[in-house]
View 1: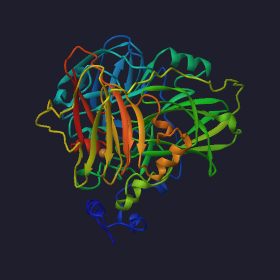
View 2: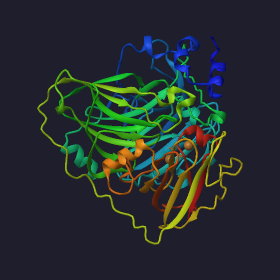
View 3: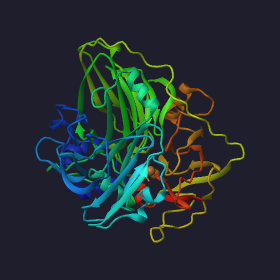
View 4: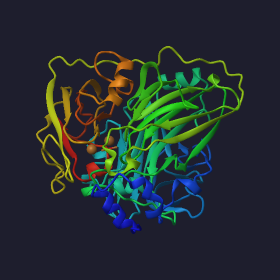
Length: 520
Ligand code: C2O
Ligand code: CU
Ligand code: CU
C-alpha cells in the first residue's frame, strides 16, 4: 500500500488508524524517519555566554532591534532547514533567538522589525506588562512594519520566553523557528547560583524542548492533525535547543537545567532513567520563578509553555554512566488517531565523563512565595468544550473581526478571581493567561497519570508538584476540573488592560480557543 504523503495524512486524520505503525515505513517514504538518520546522537547545542549564535545569552545594555526574518537552521545532517528566526546584531556579534538576560526591574527597549512576508508580533510570555507592550494580536505589524517596546520587567527571577502572537499564524511561525528565552535575575536567583556555583552556559543550561517533522529535503513539515488542526501538530523528531537526539557530557556535580515546554502541542511526561530505573532530581522552579524550597521528584509533566527549573546531581552516578531524560506516554490525548501523539522517546542523554571536586549541596530553601488570600474572591466558571474543529472557553471563541471584544470578563485592579476550568472535551488543554501569574488551588477528577503524581505530593488538593508556586500555564486534562486563583493587576499606564486567556496548544488558539479579560 503506497499513499502519497498528503493522502496519507488525510487518511490518518479521518481516524482510520491502528495498524498505522506497521505501515509507516512503506507508506511514508517521503519523510526522514528515526532509524537511519538517528542511529547516532548529536552534541546538545548549549547557548554561549560570550559568542552570540543560536540561543546565545544576550544582556541588553541599551535599546536594540530584533529582526524577525527568514533564516536557516542547521538541525539534521545534510541540508540546512529554512525557517524563521529572531536575529539581533550587537557588539559585532549575531544572535539567533537570543536568550535575553535581564535583571528584575531592568529596562527593555526593543524594536521588532518584521522581515517576514506576513504579519507578526512578539509576545513576552509570563511578564506582567501594559497590554501595549504585551504583544496583543491587535498590534501585529504587517510585513515590512515594526513595533517598539519599552518596559521594565516587574517579574521575579525565572525562565520566561518570547514568541509570535499574530492571530491564526502563531502555530506556523513558532514551528518554523520563532521562540526565544528570557532569564530574569533577582537576589534569590543570584544567591542560588552562588551557593551552587552555577555558571550560565556551562552548569546552568536552558533546554528548549520541541518536536518536529521534516520532509526528506530537511524542510520543516507542518502538518497539524484533525479538522482545523484541532489535534495539533506532533513531531516524530525530538529537538532540544534545535538539536535532534542530543547528548551532553557532564561532570560529577550539580547541574541546573531550565526546561521550557516549547512544542506546539506535545506535553512531556519526563523521567530521568538509568537503565530502566527512575532516578530522582529536584524541582526548584516553575513559570513564575523559584519555589519556596526544592522538591525531590522522579517524574514531572511539562506542557506547552510550562517551565521546570530542575537540579540533577550527577554525583549520584559514576564516571562512565549514562542517564537519560526520557518522555513517557502522557495519555492526555486519545492517540487512536496517530501513535506519534503518545509515543515514548529519549529527550536528552547525559554522559558522565568526568569527576569533580564539587562539594555544594542542594539548599533547604529558595525563596519566599507570598500567598494569595481567596476570601471574598469572585469565582468564574469557564467550561472547555467542543471538538469538531474548534474548542471553546466558556462557550466563546476568539472573534478576529473584533480584537477588543468584551467577553464579559471585566475585573478591577487587586480583585482576586478564581477561574474554574472544567474540561469536557476529549483532550487536554494547557490553559495560559496573560497578565499576572496565578496559583493553582485544586484539581478534581484527574486522570491516572495526574492523580498518581498528586498522591506523591499528597497535600489534599489533587495538585502535582509542578502546580506549586507562581504559574502562568496550567494543564487541564480531559474530564478534569482545575481551579486557579489570580490577583488582578493593572500595571498601567493603559486602562483597561486587555489580557488574553487561551489554550497554549498553538493550533487550538490559532483556531480560536482564546478569549480575553480586562483589568481596570
Ligand atoms: Cu505564550 Cu498568549 O502566549
Ligand atoms: Cu503569554
Ligand atoms: Cu487546547
